[in-house]
Length: 292
Length: 138
Image 1 (cartoon, helix red, strand yellow):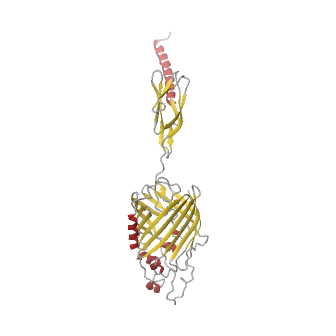
Image 2 (cartoon, chains in turn brown, blue; image 1 turned 45 degrees about the horizontal axis):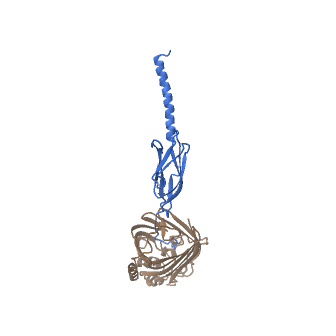
Image 3 (cartoon, chains in turn yellow, blue; image 1 turned 180 degrees about the vertical axis):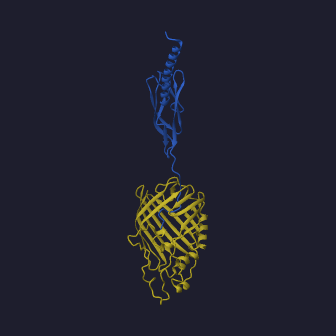
């Protein structure tokens, strides 16, 4: 949390000037949207999202949709629902619902994976390979049995944007509203947009804090999965760190080329879980995107 | 020799037929505008607030009257036809606001009809900040 506060305070010092004044046109723009009109698009291409869970397969990416609708105050944006409480030239405060990324590693049809279509007809993109994690003999005290469900949940909370000349700071605090794990997540993101002729680049750095309840629910080991690891691994709150890059090249009014990459350094508190065998996850996606 | 009653009835029928034809004529006149403007609306672009357009005024005259067109447009304060046979006028307009055209009788200055050119700015679509990168679902 000290990271978050320090970054937030630093960013707020630079918030006197803004490059993000209210736009008047949304042509080929990713940070502005027409009020009262659905924004629908789909990106078709190829990519991959690595799965840090031991013996779980990576998630291939073939298609990614975008679906958004903004009213005067309400908005729906790719599964997130929000309400703008207040907005000024240099700031925005929204009430929001959002969802956790963690359950996506466990479920093929998690909302985060919905359109990450695999060519595999049995849809086993994230199913364990059934080698080391399951099927071990009971004599091995470190063997982990079949995993219980780690369910998807919605989070509800508040987010704030601060628009500065050095980029945009986005801070979010949200709590589990479906009482799946009862935990809280907080995110601090800095991102910077750089339009360059037909190119638009966005770079971002993210600190993603998860409370002990979240870490325990997704990465803790239940007693019936492994009594040994249930005792040996104790979940703690954790901060994942990510860097992201999005590049878009405008081909026509409707078509863009899209290049997306993300690398997440998973916190030690999570990486120490016996369910993981990697302390990172990375995603890339190269595609042609069509906006209707 | 017709009786007085029959004379009265004849007058009544003749009168009613006459009044019907007058009513029909009045109705036709009301349905057909005396002064027409084409086009009636000019939409200005978001970039240029001025409306630059060629408009045509057309009128019909029921009697052989010579007319004048007066307006609040700076370049057409008053225009008068030289002959009752002229029934239209084409004007190049460059304006930022509505223009009222009025047709009057050249001799009596009686107002005959009027039309308005509406200058309407094209309202740009309302936009707002988008809070999520469209392609950040994963």
